[in-house]
Length: 313
Ligand code: FAD
Image: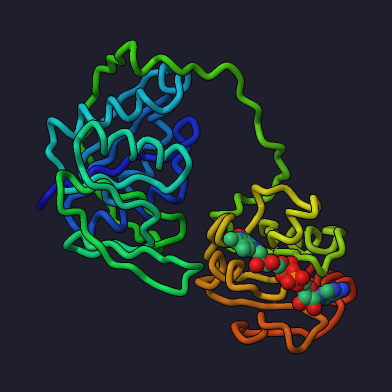
């Protein structure tokens, strides 16, 4: 079976769900071999084994956090040179895409970004023009480097006992030219990460700027809070919570849109949600054409009542 390298996306060893999705997709095309760069591998070991990594290259060094992403690209290129993989998969995060671009230059390879699916023969699917069209393509030059959007595949566990190989990290002076001078943590809300949440409750222009009912319902359901671009552009909610073409793509079990009309650019970020519920006072709102359950009403009345009912149970 060909080797498919998967860059592990993690925070101090806590593996993000995107990695379990990449390992699941990699198994279709070959043997998934994980590449762990950074610190905290002990915390990552169990998850990588649970999702079928056949081998893990472990390059532990605090240098990865000290400089921007050039060292990651450099070490990944070194590992690729010895393993000669059939493809390299990375998350479509800002860092993942920058590493992928640098890697493609180093390996003189073709690159496909923001894939939403990968076949066994490494044909990829991308969703374009606000998900109106799907593009299928393949890299025909060098080692295919593919970044995959979060929530593109349902993670499927597959127990394995991966071999581990420590990699000695030697980073060139060139890769050390950009240093991280400060990190500011995003304010923690105690809510799950938007991209990974099983439940997302989103508010739009219809909130009139009051996200209280949206947050309360999200908390009652243990979910994350999303927002339409209209709400974000009005300064009512941070951009990190924007769902849609120019925001995040989510695919939760339950997506509740409150006061969101259902513009194509919003749908592009949530239409693969398993169950979609909309609350909108306009019965003609386009969002109702795509929902499993729709409530015509004022969200300031409907959401608190739903929250009350859910909290009672
Ligand atoms: P509106 O379209 O104004 O809808 C508000 C809805 O709230 C209406 O249906 C109204 O009936 C309802 N409402 C009003 N008051 C109440 C109430 N009290 N109770 C219940 N319902 C009420 N949009 C995104 O969301 N994400 C993106 O990533 C994104 N990217 C874009 C990229 C480009 C290039 C462009 C051109 C646009 C993009 N947009 C994006 C913007 C998109 O086209 C829409 O303008 C936006 O989604 C509208 O947001 P909205 O549904 O909250 O507002």
